[in-house]
Length: 383
Image 1 (cartoon, one colour):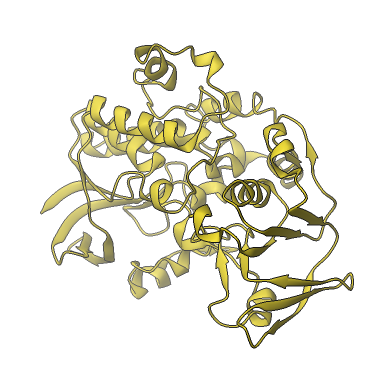
Image 2 (cartoon, helix red, strand yellow):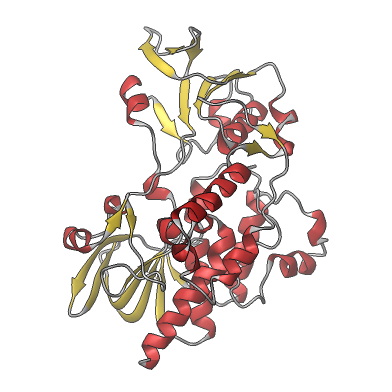
């Protein structure tokens, strides 16, 4: 196969860009199983912090609001949105936008003849002039090395892989982490019948209060006309925006979680860290906290987030990795999301250092699609 543009990843960022290119009849291929990370690495019953305005269509036609209206639902009343509802929307969007994805996985990307040769897990190859990597979070799951070293091999799982609450029924579970995902996993495990859930985290317990995202959308939308806006800010101004987003997304918890973790089986251990783990003869664990408490545990889940190191993407050829300009694990990008390797673009979380922390959230999918898409258009036109 040959194509002008190959999009790697069929999550929100890949689907949004595909819709932009499809509507303008630009040549592209989309590789990936649509919304695979959301389907296979987020738990059933999860609720989204995003609202109806966080839709995928860069042209504003196939929105979440329209999706709900066509189902006879009041968009304003659907809050919070469940993972299942959002996946129904993305299926509807993919169908309405006439997006076809090849359900394969990319295993290698390397240079060839001024473009790229891309190998898929079915053995086929694609020759592309340009490649847009929109693979999202999966490859960047992070467990602190010190915690990993303390835990017996195979006895700790990142939330990325601990997605079946029912598998923990009657089990004693330690969740390491104290932000939204940790508390959400605790609620889901409790509702699935876990015998006991302990949460250990280094900070105070976040407060339960609704997050206010209203200030983000105007900033992200404005970047379509000024993609360099964030990088032109001073270091202090950039840090202010990061801190603001951190306060909304990390220093508080959604109120709909509070009652769900109120049962006696959920126990909170703020301002603590794991400092020892001992494997018991029966296969269980005794986990010691630096507070002096010792917890009997069957399973350990790390709700410790994601940390970008673009050099760790498994499909990038070593020669490409050597060419990439990287800062603190993130690719250095131009105003069109293009890396230091001509023709190689990065969207989603890897773009969040250059374009701002908002690009780790679905609120930014439309702006990313319009910025990258218009740059590809200009390239096609020879401008």
